[in-house]
Length: 354
Image 1 (cartoon, helix red, strand yellow):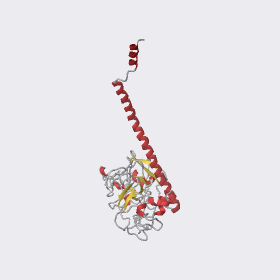
Image 2 (cartoon, rainbow, N blue to C red):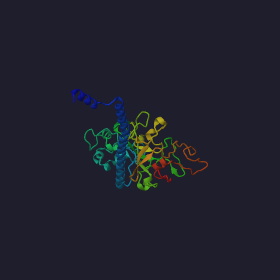
Image 3 (cartoon, rainbow, N blue to C red):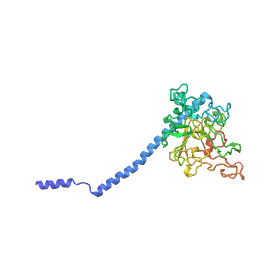
Image 4 (cartoon, one colour):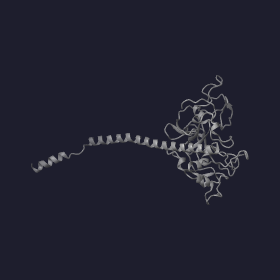
């Protein structure tokens, strides 16, 4: 075969892609990537959600171990009782400001950290205690970051300045304190169902620490710890803390600041300030799609939909629109939505599937 003929045959066999063929290949690759990315993102979120669930389970185990030792759950916030958290010896404001999370440290393999705190002084105490090395004052210890505090889906910083405890470690979780906070002072009872101070964790001016026997609604129907998320407020912050919380008011103690440790069922889950929530720092929520995870008093962790039944208006009086039925026509109309019922340990309300 002549050389020129062989060259012609080779050139025909080595023909490249046409422009149309190349574009088709690129389009197919783009479609495959578009299909793959959501699956990868969903897998990553599933892993983050599992880690968050494990964090909450650790809280549940620690709570029950604490209860085995002290026959009660911890104080939610040591709000009154100078330094020692005892409202009997000093009922005025001025508590040591420690929270339920600080009390659980020995039951979460953090005994050495717990022992470094000078418990006789406030969480914001800035002098070393008798068993501490120089510089390990309570403020510094409250800055200690532990992975257990954080949901991997939460976008919060690890530390943030807050009131009397600067650069304190942030948290993605708060204790459940009540079905309703009633910050407007409305603390009446309707149909023998209390509005306030009916959760698992309470501050020291709200009664003694709760015991399992006090959970008359059943441990599987009562929330113990709720997820919170960063950015509920329009300023991009929230106040969720773990060790303790204290307003910046000198040495008058833990006046205020309970909303950094405790959350209520009063405000709907994931209801942001930009959407009209007047109290976003008292609101549970998460960046998991569609709801948040909650630890119940029986140690289980359940994901609750953000669309769960909730009486969305604040309760100003017995005739306001918070009831699903008019009070005048039915005095026994429901007082709580399902969401609020789960925050109360003893409201006596019947709860269906949720």
